[in-house]
Length: 388
Image (tube, rainbow, N blue to C red; front, top):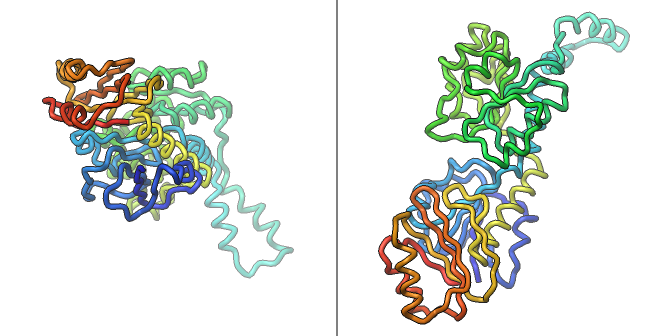
C-alpha cells in the first residue's frame, strides 16, 4: 500500500482518486511514498528516505527544494495549465481595473454620506467625469511568457479585439500550437515593452528571471503603460517599478505580490495572491497532481515533472523496474548486464535523461527478486530503484 502525505488543504475531488485499497492518505504519515502540497514551504522539512515523488497542486515550485529532490532521486511534479483559466480571468479583471476607473468610482460612491435618493442621481452624474476611462479593444497587449497561462491570456486578448505581441525565448512546441496565428512574436523583451499599452508577466521564478523587470527594462516601456504581474513577485524589481510609477512612465501596476510600500498607492492595484484562488482551479490542480502521482507510483510513468524527463511506456507484462541514475555513460549497460547474468529477459524498455538525471523503465518477463533489485541499487551512479 502506498502512503501519501498531504500538506495544506488539498481538494477532496483529487484525493478521492487514491483508492482506499491501494493508498493511505493523511497529513501525519512519517514514511510516505509521496507528498502532495500547495504553498507549504518544503525547504526546511526533512525528506524521508521513503519519499519517491512530490506533487505541487499548482504551477510554481519555488517552495520545493527541487535540486535536493533530484539528488535523492525524487520526482517533482507540478500542474501547468490547471489554473490557467483562473489566472486568465484575473488578468482580464486587472486590465479593466487599470482602464476604467472602476475602483475609484466605487470608493467615491461609498464615500458619499448624508445624501438622499433625490440627490444621488445628479451627484453621481456630475462625478463620473473624473473617472473617465479607456477601452482595451484596439490597444496592444504584450505577454511575457507563453506557457499554458500566457497562451490563454494572449488568445483572450485576440478575442477581445486587442493587438497582441508575445515574447518567450524558451517557448515549447506545445505552447506554440496553442497560440493564435494573429499573435506577433517579438525577438526581445525591450522591443515588446516599447510597443505595449499593457504588459502581463507569466514566467516562472528562477535565477534567470529574477528582477527581469528592472530599471533598464522599464526605461524601454511605453510611457503610460500598465504592468501586470500575476506570475511571481521575484520577477519584478519593486524599487524599479516604484520609480517608474513615480515618474509617470508606468500608469498602473496590478500585482498579486504587492510590497508593503505599494499597497496604499493609488496607481497600484494590489491583490492577495488571488491568481489560482478559485474552487475550479483548486479542483483542477488537485486532480492533475494526484493522477500524476498515481501513474508514477503504479507504473513509473512521468508527466509534468520539473526535474525529470517526460516518459511513458505502456505495460506489456506484470513486472516492471524503474531506476534513476546520474546522467553518465554506461549505467544502463551495467544494469542490463546484471539482468542478463541473472537470465532475466527484458521485453521492453525506455530510457530518457534531463540535465543531470537519467531515468529508465524496464519491463521484464519474470518477477525480479529482491537480490536482483539490490544488485542494481549497488551499481555505480544509480540513485534509486523500484520494482513495480
